Image (tube, rainbow, N blue to C red; front, side, top):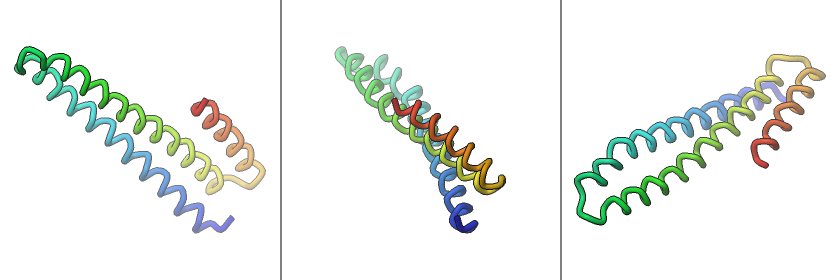
Length: 105
């Protein structure tokens, strides 16, 4: 592999992982601040609406969380190719691939 391609891949994977985790924090804080307020101060049937909305946001947060985990694993594989000789990098890639497949299933 070309070293430049691996460096760009590594930084791209890390950047996407950090972005996904920031989105998870943003969604969580948003739901924590505005969800209970809507349930408490809203009209009579607003509690069900607030719970339904928070549950939908939970689904989005979990998708971003798992995407962030996947990109962290990918960045670990790319870091293995940057820092170690080829035989060690192959083993690191195999371990991270198994970890990624375990996370998907």
